[in-house]
Amino acid sequence: MKLWGGRFEGQMSDVMEQFNASITFDWRLYEADIEGSAAYAEALAAAGLLTTDERDELQRGLGQVLEEFTNGTFELRLADEDIHTAVEHRLHQIVGSVAGKLHTGRSRNDQVATDLRIYARTMIKRLDEALCETQRALIAQAEQHQAALMPGYTHLQRAQPVPVGHWLLSHFWPLHRDRARLEDCRQRLNLMPLGAGALAGNALGVDRDTLAQVLGFDGVTPNSMDAVGDRDFVAELLFVGALIGTHVSRLAEDLIIYSTAEFGFVTLDDAYSTGSSLMPQKKNPDSLELARGKAGRLIGNLTGLLTVLKGLPSTYNKDLQEDKEGLFDTVDTLLLTLPVVAGVVGTLRINTERMQAALDDTLLATDIADELVRMQVPFRESHGIVGQLVRAAEQQRIALRELPLETVRNAHAGLADHWQQLFDMRRSVEQRNVSGGTAGEVLAAQLAAARACTR
Ligand code: ARG
Image 1 (spheres, rainbow, N blue to C red):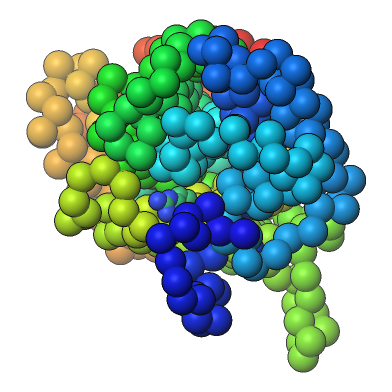
Image 2: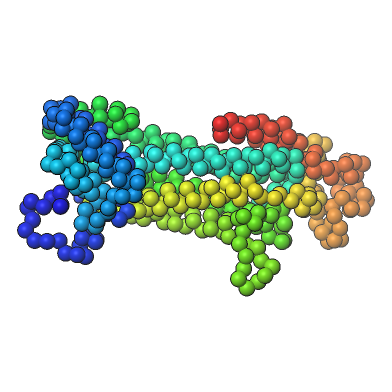
């Protein structure tokens, strides 16, 4: 059964049938499709196009189709072309010819656009939950390692000391923004295309506003031609997905580097590591490497869809069928990746003693320059003075604090009398008490703010 057989004489070729079919992947829209159809039957009855008996019969049949999908007995057939045809076909087998009234005034163009929006908003909710779990894991570790200090890096070179919790939370806020982006995307997509018909709207008196309300939409799309051709919401979701992937990849990269013997800052739990088939000693961070690698396909899905959309003439074109696999893949990839990353973070052993050991004196060079500023030395000058001291220590192969006091005094007399006291990592961190900074008090406030976002 084709939904469009009437004007055709010849049969579709086998390869064309395979090429044309989306049922192999769009079956995943079954729940949205059936929900949309049940509501549409309601709207048709309200418009006097179905009797209440017919409506009830259709809804009962749709309920059975849904059940067959959920208990795995629904039989997918390539000849059914897509999920919309498959559901209607099965409905016909269950309730008979009244099934033929369901598609009145509706096109698969407004139907698929509606289904996909329903699917997308459901998945946005699940993605948000998965992100939130990952955030919670970061918060728990940050809480536990609030006070411990580690070198903070820029250009992957030791820069300034930071609390371990501050570093961990630096990976929390990108995910927070991603959640806001998801919500933003959800709000914009939550308008109902149904009633746009093939492209020109519905001529049979379907009340779109009521239908939208029943289906949980905030309103209806304002232009039928735009409604059937618009996949902005898919592109937006794929972008947010790509950005989540990018954020997760950067977190993974930090952890991969920090888990090397060279750093030794963190140790991955066995539950998230794998071994080498050749080298018995190896413990590899495959979980994180995969998480980092997944960003590639997430970005690929976004560029893939944008490439499909660019240059399409207005309204529906079959190219749009290419919107789904990338979307499903992005959702699946993230719903698999995020729990793994949450698990890695949650079970991570953080080796604070190794971090502590990496805190060398040069991390305080900026603080020493700041000290000179407090003695009224212009910062440019103080920067130069400390730079020279760092160079002198480097040349003598000694730590900064081991420089002969004579050398320090020559650089600036004011530094010499409390030179040793300057080498205090904690003091450095505590001095940065601006909001968003490293001091214990502001870090506690940051933690509280983060916690509030995951409630
Ligand atoms: N399977 C199609 C898709 O995913 C459904 C819409 C088909 N519409 C059409 N006019 N052939 O886009």
